[in-house]
Length: 302
Image 1 (tube, rainbow, N blue to C red):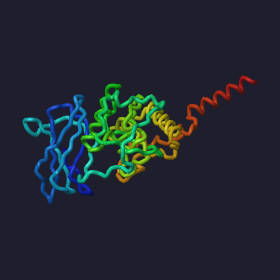
Image 2: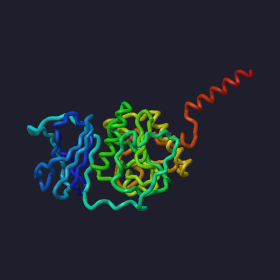
Image 3: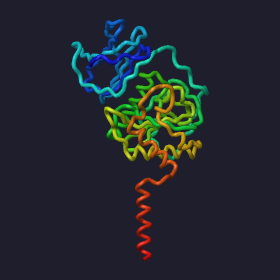
Image 4: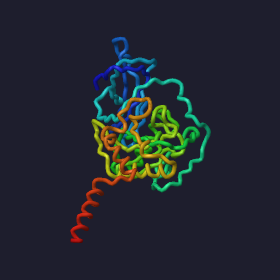
């Protein structure tokens, strides 16, 4: 893998995730510093049995230079098949302050969404008590990761995402409130009435819903009708339960302080469809059906 472009912001940590078929492969990274490359720094690697992995490299000091990576086997540097879904560089430091609200809450989650609960996908308990909030807006995401093809793959992917968020990103729990797979199955992330971790500096009152997959180049996973319908159902449930309106439905790229492509160009282009269906506007198919019924009734009366 060739060197990256230079970075505009200072960083000391690189976090990436993807798929790694070979369980015997590890990674190292080096950074360009004052025109020379630093010594190689080994990555901390966590890999699931199905090949999903995340890895983290922490450099001894901050910098802005280009990066390069290499794969390693026990015998040394080696070629390896690897798919990278996302990579983030950032400056580590003191832990982020706790979200406003404080204290623990007992989630009240009696809903009619048919959600697959945390116990069903083997969720770990959060590291610390949650902080309560009252939902008042809805943010659409994509996980920028694997697109599962079966129920078991979806269960495994949600579990991987929680581990990546807790142990990779250092968060309290999985960041989203709901995750949706291509079949439209809705998985419980955090309880909806507690603060999530999905939009930088804009999480209070903000419900995060993420489609599983990467709806953006180079992967361009398609958005299914079942996923779209799931977001509409979640929106309508949030409106009935908390008064959240379609006007609050935004993409991740529209909120927060971090530049992002989320929820991917493919899903972002279709968000107005979700708003329209949430408002109850008829789809094109429904309009054509109503028109044809009207024509048929007129012809019958003649």
